[in-house]
Image 1 (spheres, helix red, strand yellow):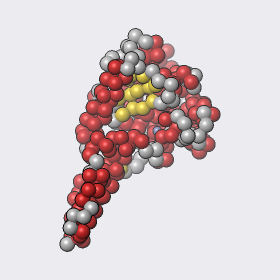
Image 2 (tube, rainbow, N blue to C red; image 1 turned 60 degrees about the vertical axis):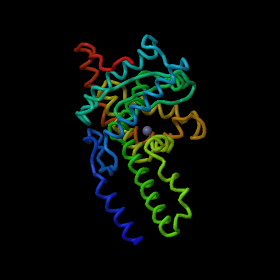
Image 3 (cartoon, rainbow, N blue to C red; image 1 turned 180 degrees about the vertical axis):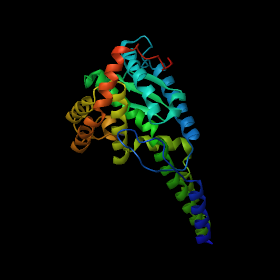
Image 4 (spheres, protein in one colour; image 1 turned 45 degrees about the vertical axis):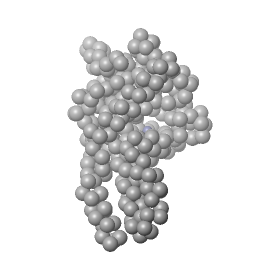
Length: 292
Ligand SMILES: [Zn+2]
């Protein structure tokens, strides 16, 4: 009986699990099959709700910078150049409902949630004295996580574990006549808990490496100097290990990361040079990000 239930559960999981490649490889060659248990629509919906909630709270606390703020303008000018480049990796990103905001907070943090919801904290810009090229590297890296749907991949993995755990609990319940049923609630924490769990875990080295490379290419194509990726992570490293700042606990800086980026700079340098030439002969890019 137990074995039958377990194999039925595994069969359901496997049937629901899709193998996909969320983006094309680009010049940097980021190619890897990903296992997905949740759909993009489910994840994007959760992310949009979570982002709207964050914006609302920040606004109530007077921490959301207005559209007229110079830092908001600066960050949005950079996203206006980066976002059009995303179609190189996935054409559907042009139709995403991108949003870009800045929150007043001393924390070193920035993120892009699934579906293109970007947030920068003033702390990371001011304390690291970021140049536009360096902001573009962080933004490119975070956008890359969204394009590759790393959030969906991680949530799928956590969801799979939760389902397996819940299945295990049901088996235990049958075997023990309901003696440990109270523990079932822990396993079935719901989809919202999943968002929290996923975003508190450190990114895997694989995801970080993909985001670094795709981010580097996005920034280069938008006309931002690829060497800034190296100076950025050196600045991060100078802030000390993963102990304090939020961003570094999920994005550990290391010599390996810096060396990998350094090695890819020559690959994307021609894209940067071409973008610079193009910028001098054409009009400024169209505004794509909507004010909230
Ligand atoms: Zn990352």
